[in-house]
Image (cartoon, rainbow over all chains, first blue to last red; front, side, top):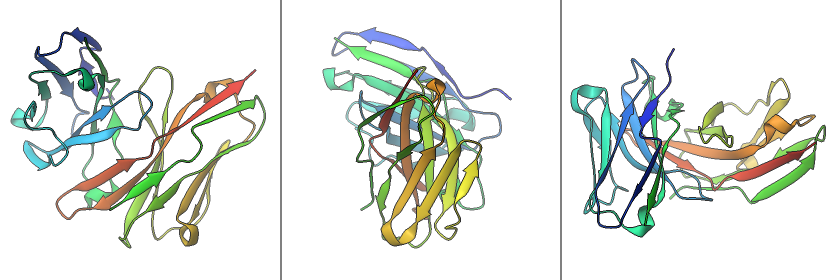
Amino acid sequence: EAGVAQSPRYKIIEKRQSVAFWCNPISGHATLYWYQQILGQGPKLLIQFQNNGVVDDSQLPKDRFSAERLKGVDSTLKIQPAKLEDSAVYLCASSLDRLRPVQNEQFFGPGTRLTVL
Amino acid sequence: AQKVTQAQTEISVVEKEDVTLDCVYETRDTTYYLFWYKQPPSGELVFLIRRNSFDEQNEISGRYSWNFQKSTSSFNFTITASQVVDSAVYFCALSEDQGYGQNFVFGPGTRLSVLP
């Protein structure tokens, strides 16, 4: 079974530029998550989708970050415009919906390492 | 508010030593789940174990074992006879039921270095 796919793996941009990341979850996984992992810290949840609907985006900086999951499969995360503090690894994860979401173990992709200069 | 604490930032051991990684959590919920993930140098987080708040039985999987103690809000992870391949950052995570989804919080991680 294929895992969570992400692209690109690395991205270097100048501040104020825009960037987009793509994620393809494990087939059949209804729930998709985007995390930001700053160097030396644990991942921080940015947004959670169930199918193509947003379940939780309370920690997404909506003035510059946006995400969508059209057709309930692939997802894109965009940053516009980027700031220096956005330098981090952006992780995508997916989970099979169990009877109760609290039980979901998440499976992670390899991440996209973003460097903002 | 929920919180996950991993007080050990970095641990170094020599191969074949046993090592325990500590995890302490805070939650007001009675139903919650705890997880451990491994992040090797390649960067991809690997799921290791899930535990629910009603099951305090210790679990062993090969060289890995987990000790869940609700009385002290701890979920510690022990690697027996450590190997160089165990070198990674290990994260403890807490999942609470938000009703409409899953509130998933990671601890800051413990970097384990196993020296040959």
